[in-house]
Image (cartoon, rainbow over all chains, first blue to last red; front, side, top):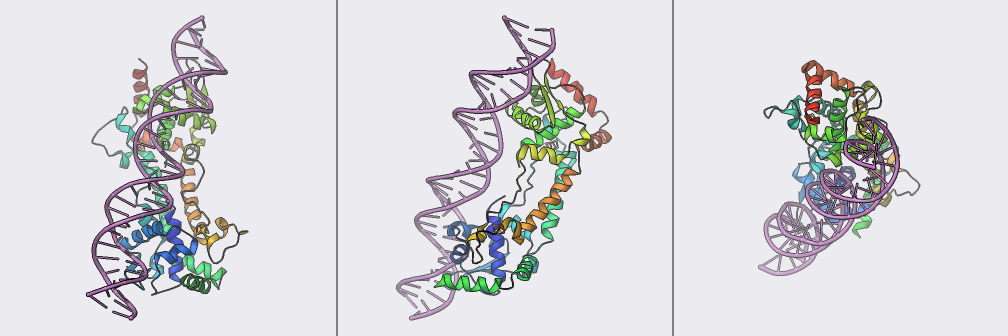
Length: 158
Length: 158
DNA sequence: GCTATTCAGGACATTTAGTATCCAGGTTAT
DNA sequence: ATAACCTGGATACTAAATGTCCTGAATAGC
Ligand code: SF4
Ligand code: SF4
């Protein structure tokens, strides 16, 4: 899985501590010492997916485009890593004894179906977890986290 | 995910139609028109994992090392694709405001935990499906499948 | 208007992982 | 002895992930 997924999730949690405030890609990158230009690409992907909203110009940056409760971990995975399944059925059955060009083996093959079923449970689990859920868990364990994040970012700005 | 997983699963189902019979890598490859040497590597991995047993020499080949009911889809995925999670926590928190070299973020980070939980449901689903289950489903839908597989292989031998 | 800041995104370059081939060595049935 | 077959290392090729750079467009502040 693309490493940017991790960066994106962390960045979204951080942004959830700063509602309505635009944060530049440079600052989000400096936060975890990530390559700015590359993180920027991931943020653009989140923006295209409607998870973040961006504003150009000075005082511009990124912020959550909607309530953190409405942003699931699956949303982020799909935005960064694509919607493809990990298991790719290449329909090798087309060369086997039951070959039939008209058959869609992705749907009929039982192996393909079993793998797809597993992926669906994976996605269902991720869809049930939102950025707000994560933020709430962090808040419970580390009540100072939001303030720490804000001051850390403020120090970067200096 | 490694393409060999699909080859391996298909090959295992085929082998389940021929219990106690050794089938060469060449024939298993010809069955679906796969690159022999490369499929051979996957079969070796299955062999090292104890899923297949191999015999050298003429009349040699591969066969299931244990009852197909005891071979789960997860066993095959792990043997071919490794046991690593798709989501790799690179512990970027170590560069953040709460940095603490002693902390194992893989275990403490809530994002890491959420992703791990999803992977576990994925694995549980795959662990619950065996090669025998797949073979049984195929048999129900296509009662002639085992015989077709055997004759197809026999024709390749000629 | 001018300038500095920032996002948007295409064009690369680099690195890593997946795919594929080949060969030399060991095993075994005939 | 020979031919068939697995084992595993070495190597090449290809695709994908990772990372950098540069141009262009938007915009806040002066
Ligand atoms: S998973 Fe099923 S449909 Fe896909 S290539 Fe394998 S056998 Fe064919
Ligand atoms: S899993 Fe959590 S702790 Fe680990 S690197 Fe990702 S965000 Fe940081």
